[in-house]
Length: 203
Image: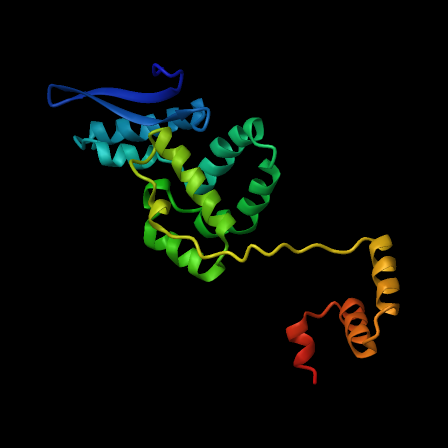
């Protein structure tokens, strides 16, 4: 158990007269049964004279992007964010399908940039960066590769739909317009849902 209260499984062994220690994984992401299975595999290697080097042990202990997002980040977000359901939707819709199988240490800036270039969604990039920063804070990775990816410039225009009583007042106001051509144009846009640019292409 670490000083922060996090709990890990380790295999301690002796090889060639030297005491060694290999981290298997963190509890409860890695269950006791899974830790024992992994320990038996490592002991078999040791009995053959093979030393399970630190890189191999670290690789086995690092969770995939999906495991970390769903088992570490999301439970934390549920207790600290009102909009955690939005994060859950974005994870399941795009981030987990795209990055899910990759271990955290395998996610690169280039991989994130490729995803972002295709999807052009700032909120997905923000969530990807936020999750990776949590992984940095929890010492799963050394740096956040998403920080080097720049967001696209957003259109700050807001989209809002008229309420039923607002539609009634809007139509009433159109009746008072002297420019009947303009009034009819507004009615056309209202009833078809087309934008001005789309309507112009119909001419």
